[in-house]
Amino acid sequence: MSKGNARQLILGAMMFFPAGEHISSWRHPVSEAERLLDFDYYRNIVETAERGKFDMFFYADELYVWDRFESSVAQANSIRPEPFTLLSALSVVTKDIALAATVSTTYNEPYHIARKLATLDYISKGRAAWNIVTSQTDEEARNFGKDRHLQHELRYERAKEFVDVTRGLWDSWEENALLFNKQTGQFADRSKLHSLDYKGQFFNVHGPLNITRPPQGHPVLVQAGASEAGKEVAAATAELVFAPGGSLEEAQRLYRDLKGRLGKYGRSEHELKVLPYLIPVIGRTADEVAERVAIVEDLTPESLGLDLLSHYLGRDVSGYPLDQPLPFIPEIDGFNQSHTNLLKIREWIQEENLTLHQLYKRAANQRVFGGTPEQIADYIEEWFTKKAADGFNVAFPHLPGALHDFVELVVPELQRRGLFKTEYTPGNFRDKLGLAKPANRFAAARDKESIRI
Image (cartoon, rainbow, N blue to C red):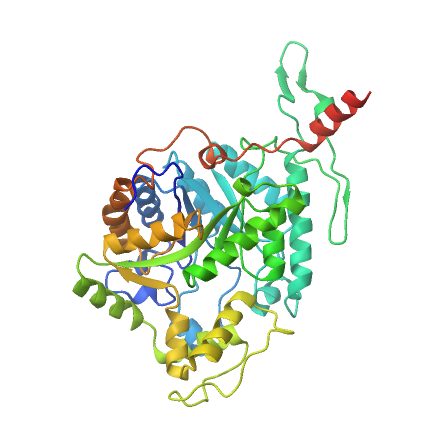
């Protein structure tokens, strides 16, 4: 395997469910599910990720209890802390690792989010990141005065406008706008404060923001989703993309697709980093790998597995025979949840003719990859060197144990191969990623005007 590769992996440590990525991670024999509202539980996890030199801790979030089915309450975890409170607390017990939160553009307002993310960026000294999502379900809509979730294409249009407003608000104050001159009584330079006066299809926002420009200029923007609408949002706005897994060839196509869209937005390839999901199940030997994978794959009860598949399909499948394929092909047209998940399930149905039992098992365990530390490192290296990934968003089948395994066993192997750093570089999250600080739009416009004059 190669050594001394000048290009370095980016690694994110992901937490979807607080007990792990797997929907039944709370049932794992070594999970600590009873500590899901204990700050020290999260502190241990993020400090372990920082010890492993992870670039980012990514905390996913949802704004509802998944109560669509009996099993989704009785057998799955819907408890999770609020992200800004949690990440702000974690920022004071860490130093280098970035802190990313999922924030929905459908059920928030830009002014709120601009202010919260700017504050997190200050508290963490430039380590804030925002995973931009549009939400997926009617359950969320009903918590915010709606009967149905906003239609797929429309919510992505709203998302692009939301991000534009938020970035404009971050530019409200120019650098060095605050003077703090006690002798003259001048707190700020009025000429360096700007109202946004944004009027669009979804938002009318006057501004300015009542917090100065964040240390990074703009916190790093993250986007997930591989639908056409999602890829366009990513190309227009994102700096990190959380990509789905799949085969190497599928990942390479998505990587080329995303990078190829950047030119029309005046962006270059290095301004967007692609991080596929990876859920490693690590064992020191082949037998231990097989044993640990089997534990994970058997965690989800049949009722929950069928209901999870029904959720992904938007259609109840629990009444169909388990030993036969589904008698229908789900349609994308008019589907208003995750298109990426539905397309993958359609592919399994059409190309592999899986029985319903095989299909729900695949849906519950779709991104699990078992291997020894060397095999996990081989997989990461191949995707990295063959331009399928700039790094990985690593999720864990259970926490905190699977993260400890990765840090103790896989990270040293990646470092030995010269693929991953042994120490953090100085600076904020943008500096560490090699991303430029965005220009302040108001200062840039004034400077452009003065040159023209």
